Image 1 (tube, rainbow, N blue to C red):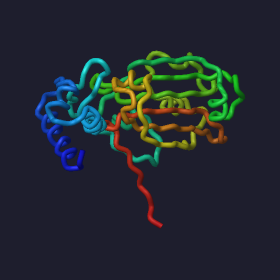
Image 2: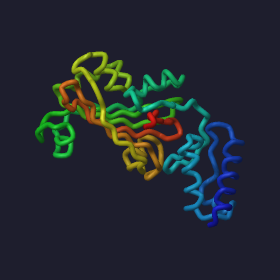
Image 3: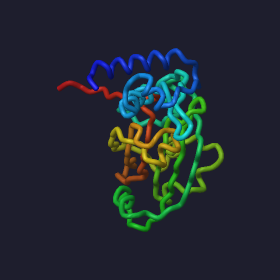
Image 4: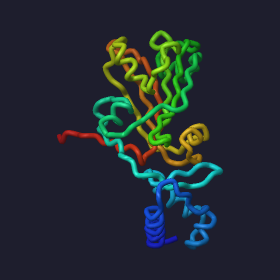
Length: 237
């Protein structure tokens, strides 16, 4: 398909999506593809761009729905802050959905990432963050048990391990090293975020350090692009 028809397809889809009220269910992909004279693969590629903007959401086996417009969390990356802090500043109300807290043993990968011996007891905290009944982030933190015990994740936990450690004050946190990529959603993450497998997400993998240089947390975060906009302020020279 040439470039012009694809742009026309996006324009027609955008007009259709904008004309519908929130939570409206779109026609099925096979029907839309036939109606617009394009392949399902081409239609799916165009739809993914709208999903990335947070305009629609696709639920496996259910359908595609129009999403109500919501404030976007727009923030710089120079300072490490929790989603709760960022959302509060952006006027966005967030809540914690599914929460799993487990005690596990460090495999070779996590032993290397946390600089601990294999077999060390770790606390694993998995949760999904929602806004307006829509899951927008999938978060997974893994910490040494002596840094955070599963029993410390009690009623009232709002979803941020970072905020919990900061309130406690020990250990003193100094910096975080984060790798940022755009990746396709795995089956587990797609199911939690009500997406289709391989839909594009922002992926942050971070090691959090204490003032002694110890890695106290290894976190993996998946963000729905349409709800988050990150930027970096850089000096020239």
